Length: 164
Ligand code: FES
Ligand code: FES
Image (cartoon, rainbow, N blue to C red; front, side, top):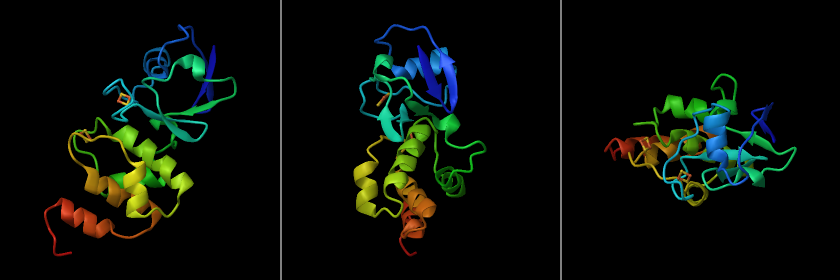
């Protein structure tokens, strides 16, 4: 079958029930998308399918239709210039980094739908798990990317400084 990933067509030969995550990683060689739980709970495997964020670890490759557009972290921008990627770097969001590609993909999908999200919007949309607990910086970076409020307060709170 043929998959369009990050704007390029890839011909892959896989069983129909192979999870899309493994096709992306093993067949196509794009390893920025991570395997965490394997049961659609943690979000480490998040990608965009036709602009919607999906968890690729449980999605069978056969669910991808001809003409569907898959975007992985490698294709979000050519040079890490997506506003979410820039905000992530500016606020030094990542700790171990394992969950972060999924977090960035989820955040980018959120901002496409809601360019000016509230804290509530962010909390509802960002259900990805971070075992390092970078949630405050994730929220702050989303606000930074959106040009909305509370980034400074969130970063200060994450650093244990409640005076800002
Ligand atoms: S690996 Fe897919 S949601 Fe955890
Ligand atoms: S940065 Fe380590 S799991 Fe999120």
